[in-house]
Length: 248
Image 1 (cartoon, rainbow, N blue to C red):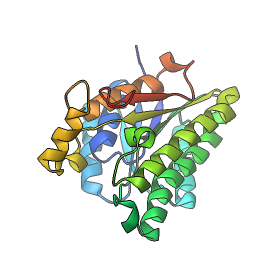
Image 2: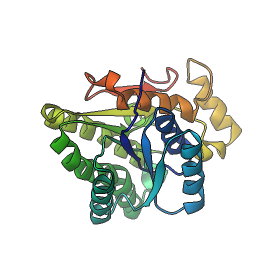
Image 3: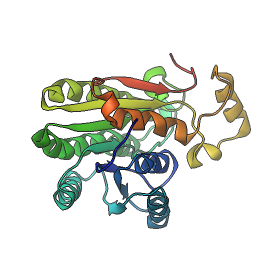
């Protein structure tokens, strides 16, 4: 079950956290994993080591997902080198949190360039390859705040909500070409980003989660693995909520 043997996957923002866990999960299932990163080469190299340790091949691909030309060149080269591209996981994203009255235009612009633009450009480039083969899996990472909202995250929540609209639209556009497009919306997950939050904030998040705990990156990766698999062939345009019941 959930065998990805001989398949090629690209995971954006794969150098750490949820992205790293996704890379490892796909590798354990047999996929060749291309680990995208934009800056931290040392962290990306560690992810690649874990991918190879999981028993499959992998490689690094440095490009900025918000740069449409760089994305197209990188994904085209990857597909040409491997002769295929089966899975794209759009995980790369940033959060520039601020209450509404303090939001600066550049914060809005940069967040949407990376979170929404980055997802769209990667989907566009990957779709060209996948539709020719009439098969493919695209999984976009959204967030619980994209559906439920959260004080102080107007820009981030808006960008993650936009990803849901994009996911559903592309699912409808390309189902006839054999490509499924789905989203995963994590809740409060233990990562480097959340590790630095004050303890009262963490406890508040746990209090809002019926399962009573912080989720792990592996919890999210398991949902991505399912959507990337053949077993999810009749699932498209859907949102899998990995949030412990925080939002239902």
